[in-house]
View 1 (cartoon, one colour):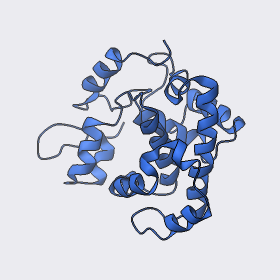
View 2: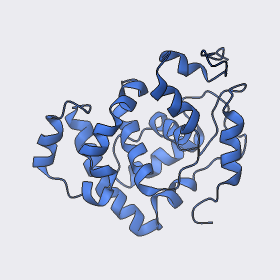
View 3: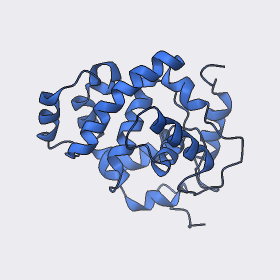
Length: 204
C-alpha cells in the first residue's frame, strides 16, 4: 500500500494526488468527482472517451485539457459526435487544446455511433454500465484491472467499441463510482461511499 499524500490542508488523500502537488484542479477532481457515482449519459460518454485519450498519458494532462475536449466534441453529446465527418477530424487534429492523436479522435467518433446503438438497445448508457457493478468489496484496492472491467471490455468490444481495454475500463469504473477505490485512510473515502450508498442505480 502506498503512503497517503498529505497536502498543506492536512487532509490525507490517495497517493496518486502527489503527482500534482499544489494543483488545485487535480485535487478538486479527486475530492469532488473521482469515485462519485454518475448516471448522466453524456458525462459517462465523456469519461469513456477521455479514458481512451489518456492511454499512454497522465490523467493530469487530460484533465487540464478537458474543457477544450468538451468544446471540440460538442459537450460529448454522442448523437452529435456520431455525425462528425472528415472535416471534424481535421478540425480536431488542428486543435492544440486537445490530444491530437488521429486514432483516438477517430475512435471517439466511431464509439459515438456505437453508443447511439447501445442506448437504443439498452435504454441508456448508464443502465448498461451499472449492470457491471461488482459485488460489494469484491474488487481489491489498487488494481489496474478486474474481472468486472474485463467483462465490460469484452462486451463493448463485441459491440464494436474501440480503445476500451480492461485497464481503461477499470479506470472508468474507478472514476464513475462503479467502485470506491479511494485509498483506505483517504479523507474522501467515506464521502464517496456515502454517495454510492445513496445512489439509485439506473434501470432499477
